[in-house]
Image (cartoon, rainbow, N blue to C red; front, side, top):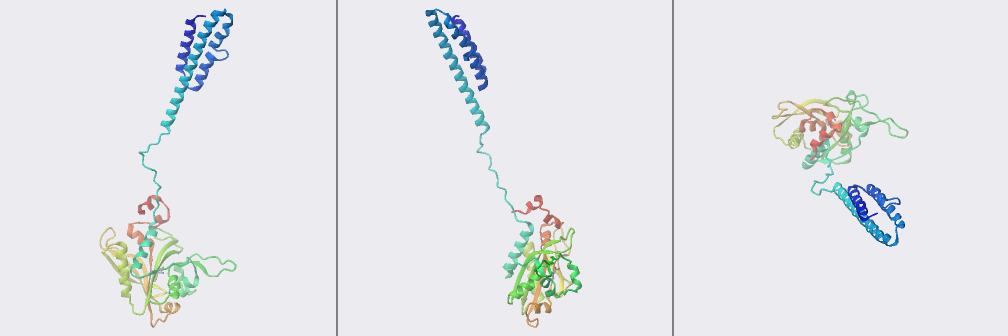
Length: 341
Ligand code: PHE
């Protein structure tokens, strides 16, 4: 074996190592030259056949070749590792110039917005805001409101009755209006009484403008020297503030409720805009019936009361131009997001 053969082996190793793309290929290349049966190893094994002087020279040469190949392998291994690291760094790179992920903010439901708005307006004109039970006693929902058990007006208020459970009060129902709050509040406060009570009510009703669960706001004003004109003023003022418009007409259309006398439906009309000229019913109202004044423990000869009960859905539909009340309960974000502010 001569030095040109050794050099050829080193050249071959250099070529092969240079072509290695990963640690596996490199291990194979190492085995091919330096492994137990590797090409260089075989040559080293054959040194024994040489005479002393030749063996020393050839041994040095093979050792140098071995070191050279080991150096080539180490160099290539470092290069492969560096390339791997580079690839990983660029794959995992964080682009600090990208905008942050937003937390996604919620919004209030349009009916909640309306209730808050109604409360704010009535508070600003001196009304208290009260809250009462949705599961109501028959007494407060009907009897105290001049609607005894055999009264035909009850059928307009067909409702959901709560099965009497052992030990529970009989005559519980889902309230059909917020009017029971007239009784509850007035029994607990002294005149002058000025209160609104917004909340849920329930009826067996379901179409584009009625839902079995809906919202009302009750209003009650009891004093010794007020008149229907005061109620009309307050309500007109409320509507102007609620809709932020001064083109609203109001009319009290004769109606019937057992607990008010006289009774009226309050209709409103915009002078401008898409609904211009159409009378729209927004509320029931009336002078609190003397029997009801008595039921809350006051003398109807001395005190006079006015009450109204307005539909929250109706007010919301008119304010935002919503045509179908069912969208309020479908939880479709495309609808709800239009109200988040
Ligand atoms: N409670 C009546 C209804 O739900 C509305 C109303 C309230 C009427 C107060 C008069 C006075 O239809």
